Image 1: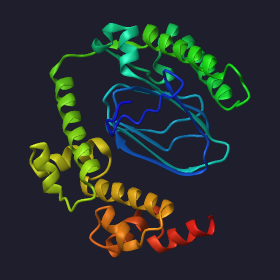
Image 2: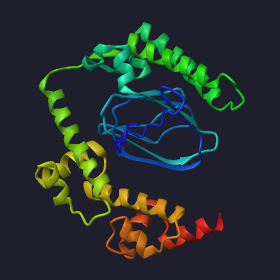
Image 3: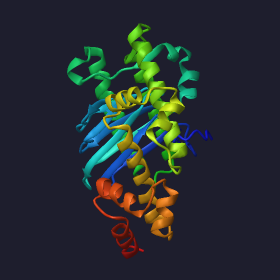
Image 4: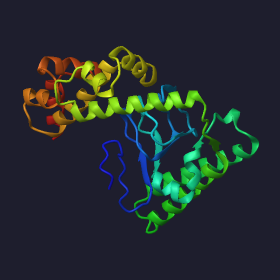
Length: 289
């Protein structure tokens, strides 16, 4: 299995990663990237903020998004409902490459439904049907041929994407600039996610990326929708929240483990992101044990 910290892919029994989301409450996936090509399908409900390369999408029932390889993206849902139902598929890039060796020269582009060509529109509706079937099968634990059916359907989805929704990669200077910026962002994310437990500064992150701090902060804010400093605090807060909910460590130990200077600074970050202090989170967690 790929140990890249960004390749959050669990293949197990299937050649393609498939995940159904139906958990109520707040959902947040920090900015990240992976080699795999990702597809997101909203069957019911909505995603409040699906940010892809700095563009903020709000999805609606039936909407399909595709994130091409190595594109930075993040998700924030303010309040998922019990009835919300979404699907994520990750197609390993090596698999796509074996099926279509020319993929390096193309992007998969799913435009807004109102902008699709006539032949694309019918295929978009077909995609919706296939993806809905995948959700139904995924939730049916008694299906003996579940893995076989999901594999067949996912390959049909990939076939439609490659046949009807490819656009040539543009080799102009704008794309080159975008790829360079994406590389800088990936380097910054790599550094934060590897060194967040240490007392790193924004200057340390910029130095690691070989960029001026002001320039890195500018492109980070423009493309991520969040400042570099807030992202670092948010990432540490997420790690602290997980440790608060899943360990018996003291608050001081957790603050130290997640890169905060102390419990007070950890509490400020937790309140900003979760509305509760570390002690309040601990109490809620202990009540449910």
